[in-house]
Image 1 (cartoon, rainbow, N blue to C red):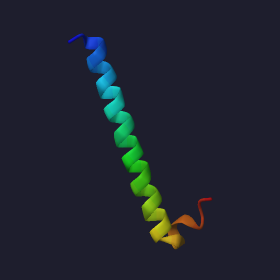
Image 2 (image 1 turned 120 degrees about the vertical axis):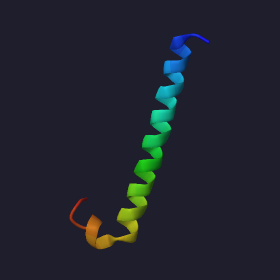
Image 3 (image 1 turned 180 degrees about the vertical axis):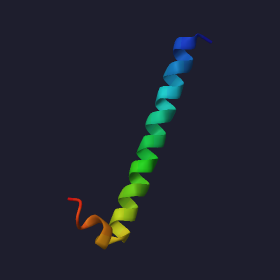
Length: 40
């Protein structure tokens, strides 16, 4: 396995983690309107 491929896999993993965090954050904002009302 080349290091280039390994770095690409870690990049994809970071992107997936970011998407999950963004979804969780969005879900929190939706469930708590008093938190999200100020940030629009």
